[in-house]
Amino acid sequence: MRAAMVLWLVPVALYGADPRSPDDAWPASWKRVGPVETAAIGGLGLGALLLEVVVKAPSNARWDSPILFDDSARNALRAGSATGRSRAATASDFGYLGLPIYAVGVEAGLVTWLGKDKADVALQLGLINVEAIAINALLSRVTQTTVGRSRPDAQPGNSDNTAFFSGHTSTAFTSASALCVQHSRLAIYESAADTVVCPAALTVASATGLLRIVADRHWASDVIAGAIFGTVVGASVSLAHMPDAETHSASLSLGADGRSLVYGGRF
Image (tube, rainbow, N blue to C red; front, side, top):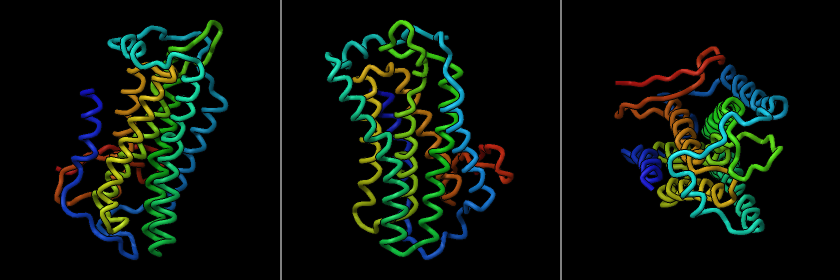
């Protein structure tokens, strides 16, 4: 419960001064995603896809035991029937797929581009969200295949040892935290809806993580780690491109050469 509260407070704490209304062009004081960075984003996405298809998790789990409160959380939250667990797994796809689609397709595409005719702003928002999702996808897959943790519902002979950390949860929190930062900087809807998006997205992301435990696909520690990782990636990538001159912030972004990740801050 405390971990969940902290994960909510981090993105919400980013809200400061009133967000600006979208201009026709991306603000000059913000960092643009240029051609080189765009190509690098494509490379990240391709790398994540290749890892998913080519690199398999170890056939024998390197980590096959619960830690901390994993057992108690599993006993309390796991659905009691196979049907219930299957439904929870299906429901968890809503946040895993829905939040990225909403961030890129709805807010950047439908609202900002088609609805407000702010093509340049829409393109930058879309690219920022895709970059965060691609970084999360690549690093989460590397972690899963390297750690090789067995899932709580693993059966003898099951080689799907990719429990740590939860990719569904990290993806949902990546998009949710990115949306929180973006709405703290930019009044995308220019209405009360801008104040609703962040808590709504965090609610969906939290439900996604909870459902992964209900479905018995992840331990609680997998979900918490995924939520923390996704929050850091989503918030940092957005902050790197949409800095607030009045605050001191750390950020994570692609380097100028498109081949490195840069972590930095202004103090």
